View 1 (tube, rainbow, N blue to C red):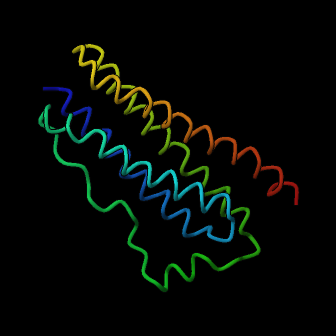
View 2 (cartoon, rainbow, N blue to C red):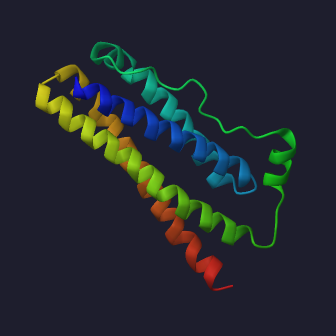
Length: 156
């Protein structure tokens, strides 16, 4: 069934977003807001996989990825946490890079929701709707952080 592909697309998009959020959190550990929110959002991706698992099985989609964290060695993590003079520019760059990844994940949920509506799977619809809203809030948070960071970075 074609819903299997939509579920796999959600898995792929959420996994990539989670990896990039963990990477951003580790890289910008000196910024408590970015660190905490990025890690929280990345962990929510794993929760989304768990909620979607019964439907993945039902529709024959492949299993969700097990490891969502980036492969950072202890040395790489030490380097990532190092505070550098251009930290604001790096943060702005990383947030800008994350934005389309988060938006892609949200669109994958929108597509899956439309498929669930088309096949009238009320349980799947009830599962997806709140997750799709969370996915929308993720990229909106990124957009807000970009708006907050830009003037500070560009005006100094």
